[in-house]
Each structure stands twice: as structure tokens, then as C-alpha cells.
Image (tube, rainbow, N blue to C red; front, side, top):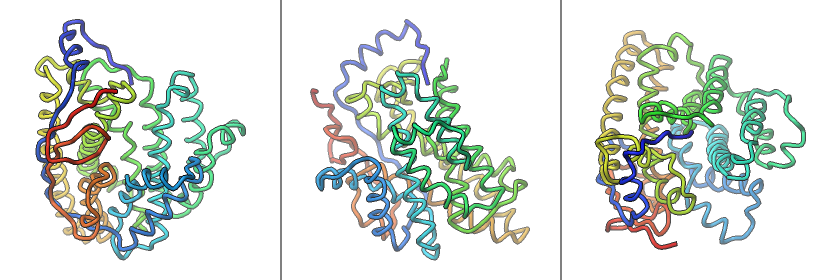
Length: 361
């Protein structure tokens, strides 16, 4: 995604270049969440699986990577009664999509014009096709990981669910190399670019469900889904801004985009406060449509839909632990409602009881 910036925003560019600190206000979560009882082994097995493809071998490197608890997201989305095997597939998928997304952002791929070729190969593998150059998996080990994982995931999905999963993945692939002329266009692209929407069919797989298109394609269902997706990518951007700005000098983040494109935003703190307000509104929007869907499912005695609606309550709070390495393991077993974010920026995701500081590099 590429931004088109007005020259009248030169002063905010100067502000951005001199940025030293910022703080994140309290983010309240309306619904507590609990984790799958096998989350420890799910995370460990998922970690070791992806490390074998990423070439992570040293104990120190493994420890650093495991601290992100990336697979825990899948463990939050599955009820305690769900088979561990399906949750483990979700943990591996979470790691895979995270690693793929990072790799597609690497300059040697994005600047080399190879991103489209890799995305096409990913779509082919996800779909069960083999119409991609055989050399690619040899060059990109993560594509071999796709080849290993996706057949089993597809085997657990009923046809309508699989069709939605593939459609959402295709939407993700079309969000690259697209220019945006406003913050609103950026937000619409970001909703698909963050790779959250494929998780909704994954949740059906976790539960052994296959919701009909008349349900999963309804206006209220999609509105609830969009609200969750928007909440997820906003949280992701809040957490990832420090690392992206400090280490990668990337500006494709809602904070940078708002600062550079919105007339009412003059500082990063303005952008943060605006996004945090929108986060609360998105959760309220989700709960509104969720309530409508629950009443409809109860009236029609649709037990499959009720099970699904119970599961998706975990998506919003479940997103936080996989983004924040300092959250204590207590939340994984006890559930939680909120935490106060005052981020220290020496490392991405280190929680501290003081305002953030961006160190000299």
C-alpha cells in the first residue's frame, strides 16, 4: 500500500522525524477470555514447527521468538472441548501467516518485484493447486511450510467454509501495491491486508462447523466480522508502530497515515488518541451486531451459529497476548478485561509503567 501525501503536511513530517516518545491510553475490553487447556504444548509444537522452516536453531533465538506467543491466538479462539489437533493447526497457521506477512514486506522481495509471484504461489498452495514455479518453495522455505500444512486444514473445512477461507485469502493478496488517497481508503485496504478475515472460517473449522452462506453472508454477520477485523488491525498498528518506524522506517501504519493525511491530526499522540477512541467504538459496534445475531440464532434454534458466536467473542481480547510479549502467563488461564499500555520502545512490545521512549539507533 502506498500513500499520496499533501505538501501542506511538511510540518508533521518534521514532527515524525523528531519523535522520541508517546503513550497509549487505557484500552478496555468488554469480554474476558480464556485459553485452550493445551495452549502450552500447542505453542511449543507450533514454535518448533515454524522454527524448522525459518532456520531458527540457537536456544537464544528460539527463546526470543517464542516470547511473542504467536500461536496463543489460535488457543484463545477454540473452546476447551475442541480437539487439540485442530487448535494446533490453528497455532501453526498463525505462525505461518505472521512469518509470510513479514517476509513479503522484506525489501529484497517487495522492492525486487517478486511479491506478486510469491502471493500467487501462496494462493495456489492454499487452494490445493500446483500451478506455480517449482523453484519457489526451494527458494522460500515458508512455501514448503504451506505445502505441508494446508492439505490438512482444507480436509477439516466443509465446502462453504473452505470457499470463504480462499476468498478472504485472495482479498488479502490484492491489497499489496495499491495506492491510497485518504485515511478511509487505507482503512478499507488494511481490513483485508492484516490477514484476520481468514480466521473466521478457521473458527468454523475449530468447532467442526460449516455455516451456510445465508448466515455467513448476511449483512449483520459481515458487519460484526468487519468490526472485529478493524479492531484487530488497529491494535496491530498500535503495537507495531515503534518497531516499524525505528527499525524499518515504514509509514504504512494508521498512526503515520493519519498524521500525514488527516487535517485534524498534528502529532503522533493525536493519532494514537484518535485510534484508541475508534477501538472502543469498534468493539461496541461488534457487540451490537453480535447481539442481533444471538437473538436471531436463538429464535431459529440455530445451535451451530450460537456456538460460533460464543467463539468469536474471544477474537478481540485474544489478539493482545500474541502482540505483547510481557503479558504474564496468568492471563492465559484466568482471563482478563483490560490493561494499561504505556509502552517503552527500546524493544517492540515491552510493557513499562512509564511513557514510551524511542532510543537512538
